Length: 375
Ligand code: SAM
Image (tube, rainbow, N blue to C red; front, side, top):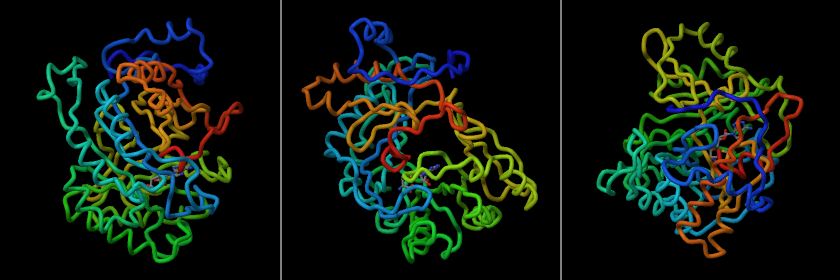
């Protein structure tokens, strides 16, 4: 990543835009042109859009068991307008998430429109001379897979580039215990196989490991990757759950996962795909199977973070652990022009937090939980 400033440990949690003075605003909007970049020199190229905070699973580590939406959803046209603004400022990857994004009835239409957009900057950071020189966006989706069997083909045809399916167990019984939805495992498996069949492979399968719950499954997940031809990614559990049950002891850390996998079969490390790659990647000594480990707790990657998030109700979050939302949709409702929205986005991005503080004495839980932010 070009011009990345030295990693810093200062706590610079965002100040709400509406509390700012004119002078603050002036000093924070120094970056008035060029590709979207925060004050630490991190290029913002990755936008995660939550298209609903409804979910048809009630995973024990995520939800309390309550159902239904807590926050509003926007019209698809409004999500698209917002994405267009971000793309015009340099975003290249858009990940659709939720809640459960497959519950959003306008999703296929949204992907079709996203597939028509083109990147606005060249890899060297210069603006493309015209739309014909832009590249198609990288359009990804994170889903629990429950409705995927019927939607994989239309999504692929609409232009979806790739898919990640969350799956926290490879046996039906444990899976149903975690999701609290009976017979969910077979439906998700059918969804994964259909995604592969229609050309959405290599499918990534994300697993959050919790001590005493599904940590017995590490080796089975390795077998699963080798057998099904999917990329399995273990994610360290973060304090983002609704019922605030996170404890450091519950987290299965990267070192422990690596030791367990190495005992199963020797691991071979793979090179990262890009500078902002969140996962450390491995295969096994025979080259069969791929495992990624995403370790936000034991090995934070904030220094290379290229992401911002849009919540289902149109708020920008500059970090999963932000204490504030930035009401971009509010700016739209007030009649903001495209130029005004661009200025607002640049201003918000300049306030992106340096890092999260998981496990530190001053850690404050974020103002929203994972399911209401968009994972
Ligand atoms: N419903 C979709 C799904 O299941 O993939 C998208 C939303 S879900 C919130 C996105 C991802 O966040 C899932 O892989 C889920 O396991 C993960 N997740 C939820 N709570 C988490 C936590 N506290 N720590 C780490 N990952 C979490």
